[in-house]
Image (cartoon, rainbow, N blue to C red):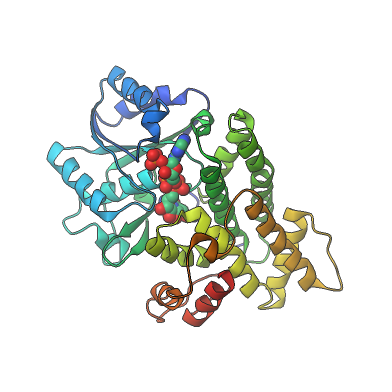
Amino acid sequence: MENFVFQNKTKIIFGRDTESQVGEETAQYAKKVLLHYGGGSIKKSGLYDRVTASLKKAGVDFVELSGAQPNPRLSLIRKGIDICRKENITFILAVGGGSAIDSAKAMAAGVPYNGDVWDFYCGKAAPEKALDVATVLTIPAAGSESSPSSVVTNEDGDLKRGLTNDLLRPVFSILNPTLTFTLPPYQTACGAADIMAHIMERYFTTTQHADFTDRLCEAAMKSIIHNVPVCIKEPENYDARAEVMWAGCVAHNDLLGTGRNQDWASHGIEHEISGIYDVAHGAGLAVVFPAWMKYVYKSNISNINRFVQFASRVWNVEIDFHNQEKTALAGIAALENFLSSIGMPIRLKEMDVGSDRLEEMAAKCTGNGTRTIGGFMPLDKNAINEILKIAL
Ligand code: NZQ
Ligand code: ZN
């Protein structure tokens, strides 16, 4: 096991009716907030009314900014920064999914900064201060409700880039599984694919002897594999929704990555796809992750062993001791079957992504071929191009 520091400041308030506590929790930090949300699902579900009533009851004034889109855009973030500065706002409450939350985090970093917030996402600067952010989560997926990350799309150049900094972890997040009852099956499945990917990015490690977190990862994956089909079949099944919501949060709160090196190449590749084609992040990962697996699984003996463990412990594949490759491939096939069974695409063409921009994407995520990505197996521009071809 490798040395690590684990610290996660986000207070999780989990369960039925917990959004009614948002006012009193927020009042501990600020008397005036920016209320940030997406395209309207929270109005349709009645959540907006409950959140604003709770804020009013606690004496918290709010200014609203709606319109965070999936793959949240830089232009709206700049607008939010202007509003916060003009209104002297020091606290942002995001109500929604990863997009509204990431957009809120970007504003939080941008408000106290003298330069342009994009500097943080292109590596030109690092935030030294940020406003406080809190969330009411409506979709288990991105894990942004307790992660230190924010991922933003700059319309200028279709660049989707991430910023990771502990300042960005929300001070509290409210997770009420009933808020996810209204999720369409496709969004539920996109969330599941993203959660699985967050676990697998950590699971596929070159660190030896990280057995405790291996088994935590396996338990989290098994829970998703079991409960997501239930959520799709019975959208109002509280217990299944609750399992997925909590697993989705833990999948990306850094616990499962403790003491081990991690990969993250599939996320790097996917962000280029959603940056250009504006597809759902989870759907992009459902396509990229199996392709990545097919490229890396037999790169060396310890890598193939890990794929055999994945096949056996996560997918109950019987190990063929004479043919490890067969076992490894059966695990990858089981993952693809699962993703497909919940309605995810598993090839780029299912998302109307053709072969014309593969090289561009491979170049973009390797800084024009100047660096490699991935901790499990470092990948250069050519390797990524090959993975994208497998994904076609
Ligand atoms: O905008 P509204 O109207 O709210 O509709 C949303 C949106 O269309 C809808 N939705 C959300 N909750 C709903 C609902 N519809 C009905 N009922 C509900 N309860 O679902 C759609 C997707 O929402 P979005 O916020 O985009 O989903 P998600 O949570 O998957 O976030 C995706 C973004 O997070 C980033 C992704 O790259 C992507 O941009 N990520 C953020 C990470 C982080 N900050 O740590 C890590 C991830 O790897 C990821 O990159
Ligand atoms: Zn993700």
